[in-house]
Length: 340
Image 1 (tube, one colour):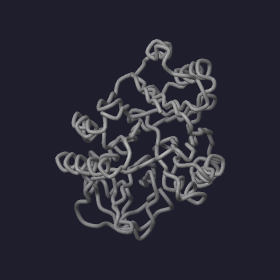
Image 2 (spheres, rainbow, N blue to C red; image 1 turned 180 degrees about the horizontal axis):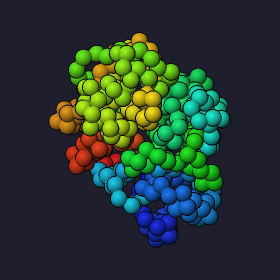
Image 3 (spheres, rainbow, N blue to C red; image 1 turned 60 degrees about the vertical axis):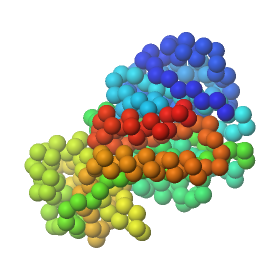
C-alpha cells in the first residue's frame, strides 16, 4: 500500500504535486475534503478528478476544517489522499434519502446491501451534515452487517450549518450519503475513537422527543433549557454554538454525545442522533488538559496493541472538537502523524 496526502486550492495543482507517482487503477482510493461549499467549485473539483483519474474510486465531503498530518487547516485549502492498494477491492456509491428527515435508516441499509460482501473489512462513509440522522443511518448499516468496521462522519460547512455536500466522482448531494467498501483477505483494519467530553450539572429529563428532534426537556422547550442553564447568549446563537455544548447521556456504560444541528421556530432542536423520551441528559463540556492526556495515553495503547505496522492512518474528527481544542488539536494529532 502507498499513501499520499497533500493540500491544493485549484484542481490543476494535483498532477504537479503527484509528479507521476499515482497509478490510476480501480485499486486507488481517493478521499477529498473540501473547504469550499460553493456548488460550482465542488463540481469543478469533481469533474477534474473524474477526467484525470477515471479508473480510481473516489469519495469526498465538505468540511469544517481539514486534517493533514498533525496540521489542521480552516482556510480555502482542500485536502486529497491517494491510497494505492495492491490486493484490496474497492467499491463506492452515493445514495440519496427518499425524504429529508425520515429515511436515514433506509439509506444506511441500502448502502450496506450494495457495498458489503463476505470479505469486506471496512466501510468508509460520509453523509450530509444536516439532513441525516447519524444514529439511524448507522443502525441501517448495522442491520445488514455489524462486523464490518465503519468509519467516517457527517459533512461540515465551516460552521454555517446551512448546506453540506458529499460526492463520488460522478454524483453529488446535500441530502444523502456516500460510501466506499474495502474488501479482501489480505487487508487488516483497526479502529478506535476518542470522546472525552465530560457531563456536568444536574441530570435533565427528555420529556418530549421524536427520534432526533427534541421538543421539551424537563417540561420546557429545548431552546429554553439551553437559555436557563447555559445563558440566553448561547441559546440565541444556536445551532452554531450548540456543537460546543452537546447533551450527554449514558448507554450501556458508554457516554454518548448529541450535538445540535438545527433550531426550529417552536423552540425544539434537532440533534445529530436520537434522544428518546425518558432519557436523562447532562450538558457536556471539555477540558483541554484532560483531553490531551487521555488521548495521548489511549493512542499509544492502541498502537502498542496492534500486531502490525500501519501503512495508513485515517482520522475523521468532529467540528466541536476542532473548535474547542483550537491550536491544541495539533498536539493530539502529532502522535499519529508519523504514519502519514
